[in-house]
Structure formats: C-alpha cells, structure tokens
Amino acid sequence: MDVEKLVDEDHCVRAIWELAGRLDLRRYHEQIAEVEGSAGREHTDPRLLISLWLYAYGRGISSARELARQCEYEPGCQWLCGLQPVSHRTLSGFRSENKAGLDDLFAQVLGMLSAEGLITLERVTLDGTKSKANASGNTFRGREKIAAHLEAAREQVRLLNEEAENEEKLAARRSAARRRAVRQRASRLEAAWREVERLQQEKRHDRKDFVARASTTDPQAHVMRNGEGGTVPSYNVHVVTDTKHGLVVNVEATTDAIDYRQLDAALQRCEEKVGQLPQQIVADG
Image (cartoon, rainbow, N blue to C red; front, side, top):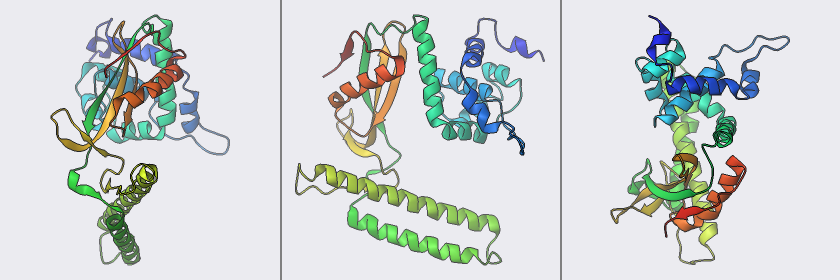
C-alpha cells in the first residue's frame, strides 16, 4: 500500500506534521538520547507522538486507548504512523511524563497561530460548564471517617507487604496487583484527607459550623449545582475562545462553582499563553 495515498495533499494531518517539525523538541530528545558511557533509551520519535496528540485533540479525542485504536484504521493516524501500531501505554506515558513540556509546546502552537493572524484577541469569549466527576455523592466523607479508612488502608498495606515476603503463597502477579490496588486506595485517602484539611482552613473564618467533606475516590471533586437543578460531584471547566476563527486559547478545570471568580484568572492565563491581553472579553453573568 502507498502510505502517501491514505490522505489528500491538503489534509490537515500533513500540516500538523510539518508544524511539529518546526517546534523546539530538544527537551524530548534529551530524555532518550545516547550519552557517554550509556546507550540511549529505545523510544518512539517525540515528533510523531506530539503530532498524534495534536491531531487527536483537534478531533476531540483525549483517550490514549482510543487514539491507539484509531492508529489501526483512521487514515490520518495511519499516515502519521506509516501503518505501524502505537501502544496506548506509549501514548499515555509520553503525555503524563511530559505534562509541563507539552503545556509549553501547546503555547508554542498558539504563538504560531497568533503570528499567522489566526488568533487576533480582538474579542474572546469565556464560559464555564460543569463536568461530572468520577465520584458519586456517597463517596464523600468527613475528617473522622477518612482518618479511620486511612488507618485501615495503611494496616492493609503493611499486612500485604509482609505477605509479599513469602511469594509461595500467591502467584507473583496476583500478589503485586493486590498490593498496587491497596496502595492506590491509600493514596486516594491521603489526598482526600489533605483536601478536607484545606477546605476546613479556608472556611474556618466564614462559618464556624462548617464541616469539610471530600470524596474518597476523587478527592479534588466538589459538589456543584448542575443545569438540571440537582447537585453532583463536578469540576467547573472554563474555556477561552478567540471569536475570529473559533480557536480555543486556553482551558482550565477548577473546583470553584462560581464562574465570575474565574475572569481574572482566565485573563492572566490568556496573557501567559499568547503574550497579550484581549481587547474585549465577552462573558455571562
């Protein structure tokens, strides 16, 4: 099969590949480069992974598993990969290991769009939408219950670590999976404890009878009122969009249910990403 015939000459994926080739990718190559005395890491070309994520985000895909699946049949992804598969672990690991770098890279992309006149900042819009968290209402616990669960989790970690010393009792893989699950639960409980402490400190001067609660499965999520009038654990996602071409300038997920408190923060992020403030911003009440 002729790979070049997978997509048309004017297909956007070709522009993304060219764009990625003009970005400063030295920090990604330094992670895998050969140095004196040791070999370099075997790794997929950072330019390819960045191009795949830019192409995926442009099509509304944020899941590494879904992107890996699309590399098996979607023409744009196949063209980028040269018909070779890419593991979802490779895609996910690259994104999680390089979060700060990718944020800077996306800022470079915004800078290029701005230089080409595609982002003018003559007028931007700001709006927030409640996004349901991966937690149910009955996972929220107060300080005492979280402390009790945390102590039980720590004890379970200790017992499983002792059990791991005698691997003859359990298969190595099964034992490791159990220990990993317990450690993850303990980590979530630790995060929930810290969130309760933070909320208690913030609200102490506002209401003396305030009792902070946090979810044991999604500690950062806060209960918010949704569009249907109910309340569910959620995040408040704010998007700043340049109106000329409808391009998103920045996105931020917060735990603050009040939209108007995000205006100053959104303007600050806009200036950090693009290097200037918009001439006009449109927001609702």
